[in-house]
Image (cartoon, rainbow over all chains, first blue to last red; front, side, top):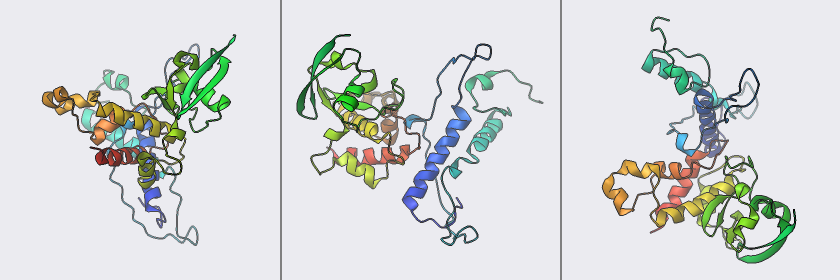
Length: 118
Length: 177
């Protein structure tokens, strides 16, 4: 992660872990399932829980960025989310040949028959 | 609905409260006894923020009617510490940064507290069955990170501090015989 100067490594790591977990939920779980005809909810909104949490490998470039502010820091909240859904979608493409562009990517989507050339 | 007298021993103190039969344990704790350490997250049993222990078993207090546990012993997050001395789990949460916003923390702590007891008496989880037949039959399953994650899966942390929560619980579990 390049988030400027890291003032509090413990907090910064926790923020990035949270961001990645957000990204995981965005890629695989989170949606409001509703019936298009009645607008009624037909399911629950799932978010990642303990059992969904991956192992993390997080490191910081930790270089001061004075272009933004005199302390050399940048915002870090939620920036860890960026790239995670794309990485997961690319991994699914790599594993299955299926390029899915709607999030979340669910088992139902993966099981829908598709043309390999498409 | 007629009010009913409910007697509960909460964090060691016996209290009798007259309440509507429809009152949940969560509302009784927060609104009537002002024990606001227990949080109301989703209020329908999905998030685990309201976890407390009833007769040492963890329950979601939002789905527990107070009248249904008349005479029980309840421990909330306020009952974990001994005065100003924090419970080892609470100290571990601070040391391992097991939170961000803190809203799920009291539920995570109460849940972990009861979960360690479940593990100590030999309760299994689905994760336990990955460790082989001999281990499962002996009932002495090691409390690995995966095991803790599975057993704590009923407590959602929207900030995503899961890894640190598991590290905190691991540290405490490792200290126990």
